Image (cartoon, rainbow, N blue to C red):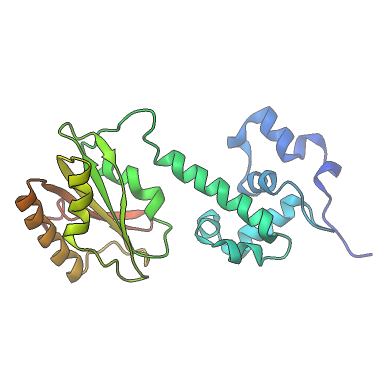
Length: 229
């Protein structure tokens, strides 16, 4: 008879993910154990933990799972559409919590503050996206809309689209942010040209552009800090 991995209820109580979470808290669990709780059950001959380990191995890391689309997840044997949706929902909730501004209106007083607002949203996107951090007179965040969604290598954006949002929401100033799906945040000539046009448009509209930040993977470049604007 072929070997099979034990189902979770066959494990000793101290090794079951839910019991371990209840006793020690979620931070004590491995990535595979946390995923196993999301998956709830495995498949014939394979526990939820083993399925979670295979999921991590297939996509390389948690970041790889976060980047995967629902069809890619559901194609993995044992996952299916329901489990794929559960996984994506969990990652989306985490992303929304990381960028939530519901309790207070955060103040952007540094490049790091601005990056913290958008990093978790932009770093895993497979298309280049342009966002704008709209600020009031006290540098409090009004909102952070995604202005355009482009391709793997470009996000067609025009200053009027960005300033339309800023004017609509009575922003005092803005910070423009976009991602490079390649993971390299180095500015391209097109990025520098757009920055120049945005600064000029900001002067005309009376809404200064405080910075243009490029996100690449877990890294970023501030064009203001780099002396490029």
